[in-house]
Structure formats: C-alpha cells, structure tokens
Length: 130
Image (cartoon, rainbow, N blue to C red; front, side):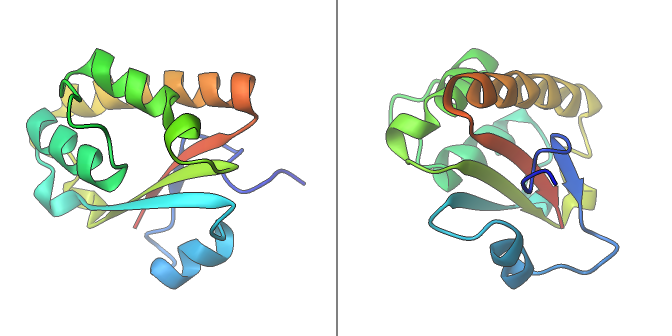
C-alpha cells in the first residue's frame, strides 16, 4: 500500500469535507510538514508566491518567480526536515482562478519539485485541495 501522497501531486478532499484534523491524520506531524494557504487569497502568481513564502517559511531572499519557487521547494529538506511536505489549500475552488496559466505553471513546478524530492530524499510533495 502506498504512503499518503504517493498517488499523485494533487489530492482532492473537497467532497469529503476534510478539515485540518483530517490532514493531520493522513499526514501526521512531525513526519510530514503541512503548510496551509487560503485559495481565496491566491488569485494569481503574485498572491501564490506571497502565500507560499509565508507558509513554507522561505528565506527572505526568495525571488518570487518560478525558478526561485522550484529552488525553494527542492531545498525544503534542508530547511524543514520531514518525510514529506503537504500544501493544504483551503477554499481551493478559488485557487489561481483568475489565471489558468499560473495554475498550469505552478502544477509544472510543483510536479518537478515532487520528482526531485522523491528521487533525492525519498520525500513526497502533495497539494491537498480542501
């Protein structure tokens, strides 16, 4: 049986009404680090970069561009040791809703980071839609 988060980049839990407590059961701390963001506040790339920087505690020099995001996601094990990393998106129906291109770009970057983390650190990265 696969570990939680190994099935794919996105885990859609909207239909089940899962709350923070449910996330912690699926991805128990401290084995997993969970970063929570509010999709209603992330309409575009700028909002995404600000939210992720705060949620994942990126360094102050984070460049708020796609390359910098990839670098920071790949560096998570050095900054926050864990078996896996979860981005829990509350109000996910609004997540990057005004910019489908930004959602596409984020999906590509997160997928690339996920592959890197799995290959190099045996860690998972999953985006949970709430």
